[in-house]
Image (cartoon, rainbow, N blue to C red; front, side, top):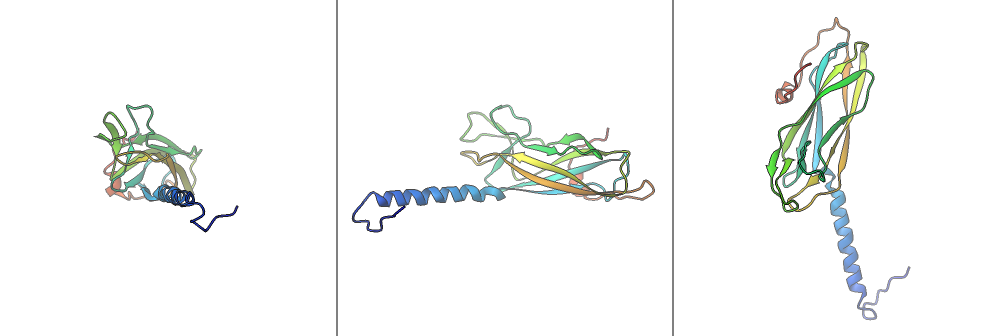
Length: 190
């Protein structure tokens, strides 16, 4: 492909170049949106006994000017926020916690929407297998969401994460940790 550098010969070249620059600029802006939502994970105990129930949490930080949709939505065409854990023979997720959403009106919708913004905590109640042996384990999961501003929404995204925990013998004493996070979750043991 040959590009013409003499703009006097073809006045159509300038608008094409400007259009390409604008298109590339918008593409880079949307690709740079990956840090709109950031997460950090927590576990409620420093060790897990066989058959014990414990809690895990995902702290979600949403940048100012952005929001994500709630887990349960009245509009079936929107993408809900969803916490998903990978199946694991050593543990079972028995309950999920999503905070109460806000109702807000945005330019891209005719009615109020259920959304999360700022900082929220999602959580789950997890039961260890009675066969859990001492050692290191990992609970893998992902957070699915769609980030939106006042006018429009970006493509849905998923953030994968891992929550490490330690299986310990029944005779070993364990301690509760991260209670500043877990005190904000409404998870009841079975």
